[in-house]
Length: 129
Image (cartoon, rainbow, N blue to C red; front, side, top):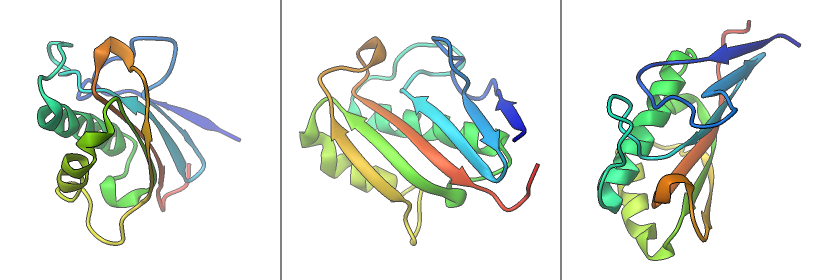
């Protein structure tokens, strides 16, 4: 199967050996996005700003892959503090409309660069390679 490497300057550059996304057929696997500003590579402050930035980064990679948030079928969200769950739900509703993607929210001990949130996704797009 043909794989396509996805890269955009509208999201933070990879800080390890991984791709921002890989497209295989109609599936796009979007790597985890933490709340780094893509221009400065600095972390946003506070949970609300971090969640918004992580979603903006994820949406930028989705767009560069030929899709949009409405094409995302599965989200995984990682939080270092599960008390932020209500804010995450509220902010998510600004980026997604029903039918919402399937989702898991997982509490973790820590994330890269001391982020409070990380989000990865799987997207399905109509157009084939």
